[in-house]
Length: 481
Image (tube, rainbow, N blue to C red; front, side, top):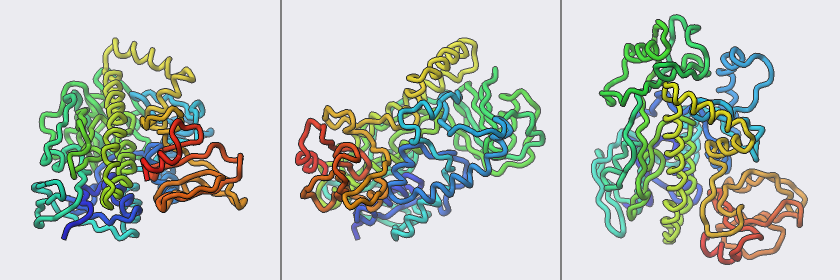
């Protein structure tokens, strides 16, 4: 049997790509080497444009439920640090400087969601189950053989045929290595740990982010969560199991306290290796998420980046399965520059965290720039991804951006939100005018003159045309649909 698409990796990126494909009418097969989902500590939030991609597929309610649950856990620590008054919406940080004010952003409603990655994976797994997506666990990929027409995946359970294969299998991607993708970048300089632990004297670690003469230590806001970074080179044994003793020693070194770990629920070791595949596609094999790009966790951008990779690729790959593969090359063209930008800003954040007087002086200047309204918007849009604009060759500054949600007044007088109209996939044409459209494009007939410009929105939320475009609507429809 030849599958339409085999996705290797059942993390958030692989699951969301599978959901995107199924929404577009293509049933993928997902392979995962782990028998059970990985419960180690990971991302603490979902970035703005990734959350919007999830909301376009009807997951807003589930995200809100998990956000409220996470905030309830964090509230005691946040009140202890900021008092009992109203708290501003979190805007994220740059190099540990929490100066981004959401109120100063051009679109303050477009913001990160404090939803932990573990909770997100539960949401995506549930939706995948609803869509009857098959996930085979405990399967390792051992080889790939590809030609112009198909890919054969050699697995621990035997060979599988596929029209396309997508590696969503993390920074050490087997798919990337077996296919021969180039993965250049910069070597690691940090030894870091994340842990959820019970401390004997937790009050000795002040809540929040703290640079010390020996590195960086972060405590909270989730109960028991501790994060350290030391700028003395990568860990000597990256793959060895993380022990309680080494995490405790790191916390003591960086914080300068004698705090001890009584018990440790989970821990990971991390570094700032920064690499990116030169292309995301080699024939019928593609990469998404950490398989295509890795960087330090500073700014919390990795999950955001990977999920929007999946949103960009999903509908294009579904079209390719149905015989229209001309869109696939636009995947690398659009997403590669976005990841390159993230690699650059995470490298800059590492440079700004180093524990020396010269770096401290530079941090002061960067912090002053971040307090200026334009500077605040610059850093805020960079970290959330809302400033992304794909180069579609159009003069209209709206074309190529990711559409924000908005309330539309429809021709019959009813009101509906843009993202709700996109839940079933396909494109969306928003206009009061009569128009003949492809079956893959839904027409949201609006009241004349009440809801801004007419526009064509791709399934990934990208604005492909407006009535101010330099190209015609017919050209945009032919190009994308």
